[in-house]
Image (cartoon, rainbow over all chains, first blue to last red; front, side, top):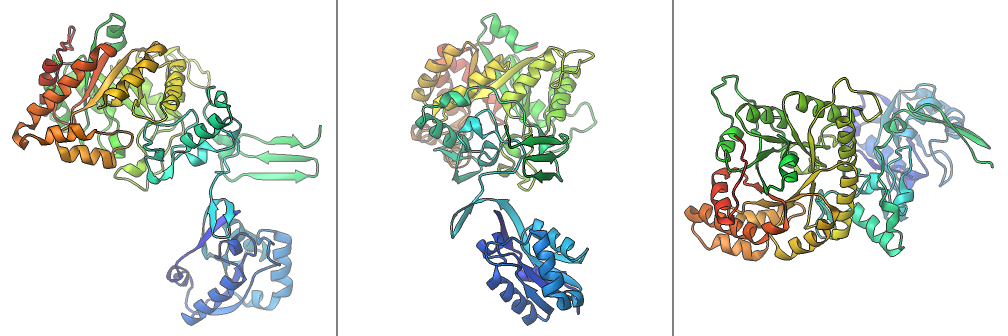
Length: 239
Length: 303
């Protein structure tokens, strides 16, 4: 999931020009789980903006709970058919969702003006209803086979691939005494599994071309092509 | 002069450390920047002098410029290079540049995180880690860059690395040390150690790895500094007994006291190491007293 937090209301109000007609769009998946852009927050945002003098012409959260805003065909249908009048009237769209959702609204409105209502902070695991943690940096080349599934790019503040720096103390990272040293977590996990051998081999430098942005993925039922500066990489899910 | 030559000859290698100033070096050639003034106290006392690379992630004069200035003044610099601020292109280029400017020794480190320094919003680079940097430096010494291109002229330098004996679990730190050795590290300097037990546990394991190790010591200047290090300096613990001892004398006597304490400590452990690396944090004038107390003399000091 893409974790998001709402921007301060003053910042959002500052995005809007006097008399700008704004339509608020939420996301019923990730932003709903983050309480940054579900039905309740989107309604509230429309009301909060109105209270501050903004001209809100409407709002919606496309689809049922669990439906992502970034599903373009659905969002386009909702905005262009179900809310066609308000969308036509709107000068801009305030999006309560992640950066992908913001772009989806641009596409769904054929190039409409957008304002981000949230900061997109990371891709994470929904550990519970009240906690989302980052375990993957979406780097494009998974290295977690040799670390027992724990990502050193994400869990180590310095993204080290060949073991810890010397900075940890009492198992905590030099950057933050509350944060576990990612490499000690990896070590303890592999040790418990009797697989410390996995972390012995040299790990070569990361291929940052696979982490270059923007990236894209072309998918079909049996084949996918990942495009980055590393060149197109086509993989099959068949024998 | 590469300090590995001394280590190979069996010399007990003594190195000091200075940090570049926050500012430029004036063009007036007669002006001595602070690190050069500090280095003067080390002349004839040590074989070589580490020059830190934006230590603690605090932005300063570049380590390489300070190395070159020290070299011009007749000192033997050890160029510290961290992975924090440069990508793989810059790191390789820096090594070639350092050799081209007369530097013979490099010490390759991960580097303190940007968050610890004075530019907390900087992008931490860490394109490579210190193990990868050791390997890439070795490849440069063999005349190839890391992607296999030939170098028109290859650098000839020695490669040092760092290990922290205080790290728990020690086995994890030793694994990284082994990786650095496999990647081409020729000698090691330890992070600051103050604890007899830490030293003995570390030496027992590290001595089997077959690379010379210099024990690292940081001068304890005051009880406040000990408390500060325990609170703020990652990976280093100053035992209470040290803090009490340095606090037992008046401020005016602390240089003498720390010389006695550090010297005694080095004397007690020197036979377990192939050298000592003294980090004086500005108090380079104390280093001769420490070495005298430690009964360490530099056979073949830098000119």
